[in-house]
Every structure is written in C-alpha cells, then in structure tokens.
Amino acid sequence: MKAIRVAAYGSPDAMILAELDDPVPGDDEVLVDVAATSVNPIDWKIVSGAMQAFILLPLPFTPGVDAAGTIIAVGRNVTGFSPGDEVMGFIGIVGAYASRIVVDPQRLARKPEGLTFMQAAAIPAATLTAWQALHEHGELRAGQTVLIHAAAGGVGSAAVQLAKLAGARVIGTASTANHDYVRDLGATDVIDYRAGDFARQVSGVDLVLDLVGGDTQSRSWPVLKPGGILVSTVSKPDPARAQAMRVAGRHFATRSDGQQLATLSAAFAAGDLRIRIDSVFPLADASQAMERNRGGHTQGKVVLDVSAELSA
Image (cartoon, rainbow, N blue to C red; front, side):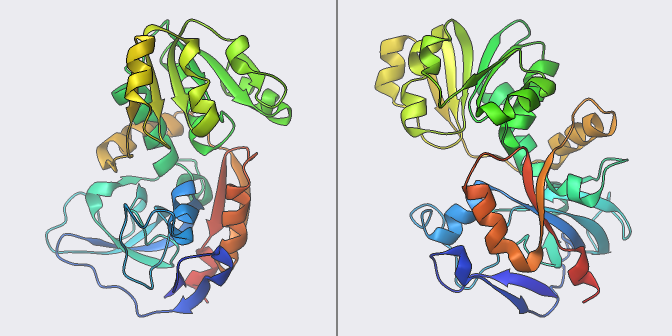
C-alpha cells in the first residue's frame, strides 16, 4: 500500500509518499481500499506540530481523518458490514492519507447512493462537526437565527444547509466571491467579513457558530441575544465574557459516530444535503492540498484522489 508519511513536525512540504506493508484488520476491524480522502484543518495543524500539547503521536505517522472506499476484509467479530460494501467515515485523528486502512466499523456509514467516492470523502468530519455544533451544543430550534462564520468552507457549507433544514434563519459571513454560493446553500443574508464589522450589521442572534476564532470570536458576543449560545470548534470561549453577556459559550471536539453519519448519508442520498468539492489533488500532492485548505477562501472541501494508488 501507499501512504503519506510525516517523519517530523513542521512544513507539509516535508511529507513523503511511501510504500508500506498492507495493514491487517483485527477481530473488530475492517480493511478498506481507500478511493478518496479529504483535507481538514486538523490535518495541517497536527502536521505543523501545533497540536502536540493535546495530541501525542509516534513518528512517523500518516495524517488524515476522512476516508471513503470499499471494504475488502472484515474481522471475525464484525457484523453489519461485508466485503464489497462502499463506505465512508471519520476514521480517527490520523491515518486516512493511505490507499488501505483498518477502521473500527462503528466509525463508518455506507456511501450515499448517487454520490462519488470523492464526494463521500468530503462528508464525514465536516458534516458531523456541523451537526454536533448546531444540534448537540447549540441546541438549535426552528425559528431561531444562527450566524455562521466561514460559511463557505467545509464545515460552514454543511452548517448552512443543516440550519436551514432545521427551520432556522441563517446569516453567514464569507468573502464577496462566495456570497452567491452561500445564499444558494440556504443563507438568507451573507456579510463580507472584510468589508465591514459584522457586529454592526447583526443583532438578536440565538446561536453563533464560530469556525474562525480569535478576533472573530471576540466580536461575536454582542450579536447574541440574552440566553444565546456561542459554539466554537477552534477555541474555548471566555466564560467570564459569556457570563457578563448573559449567554453561553461552548467548545467541543467532533465525535466520530457511524450511526449519526448514516442519518446524514441518507440526507445526502435524498438530495436534502449537497456537497461541494473545491478542488481535487492526487495523493502524492497532499502538501499542496493542505496549503489550499490552509489558505482559506475555499468553496466546500479539498479532496485527495487515492484511487490511482490502488492499482499503482
């Protein structure tokens, strides 16, 4: 098998495509031929070394959290999946930038009918993050107003659609070039975060989904109504600030959940949710794909095509 390997923390440019022995599934695991994986911010944050204080990994390692492909073997205790099943999943914190992987089947769901492997690989981490942020931590209800920062990115794109499906009014922040895209996803209003202060244009919001952090998070507190919730995927909100504003601030790490992903997969298959592929890179160009994701201003997800490596 082939896999991207990180021998030392630092620039993604130092990553290499290496030949490794095929993994062997344990009794409670499945072996997957990976057709595609996608790039998430956690990938380049781990590779850079920025997450060492929270995530300790033995070197070398293979980055990547999302995968889509075909099961080719199952452990003797596995039920519910069989060789030949086409699946997708948030497989863990690393390991997906490879042509073959072993996975806990509880992290997997069947690939949505009608979607390609490239599209399926873009779904798991981003869509699970959006769902859990809005519904588990943000307690979103029909009729509420939600402000979604970085609404054109992978998580933002999913969040706009999920919030709209929940019956919420959606406001997004994005660059001007992405305004039509975000509106097409379901946002009622879109604000150019570079052209002015969104806090002067928005008020009385029930939920803020912060996918940016820093100054964006700091300026988001005043837009919330009393009792509102600020949910961040990137940094822990200041509890003192939340108390002073009479709101709640919540930070979480996305949970891999095959059953939840299966529900979301059905929504994609039915056309209730859509996935946008920003760009596709071959596995060997994983460093370039990471830089594309790191630079921001994407529409949807950056994907790595692994299928060519299966026959190489």
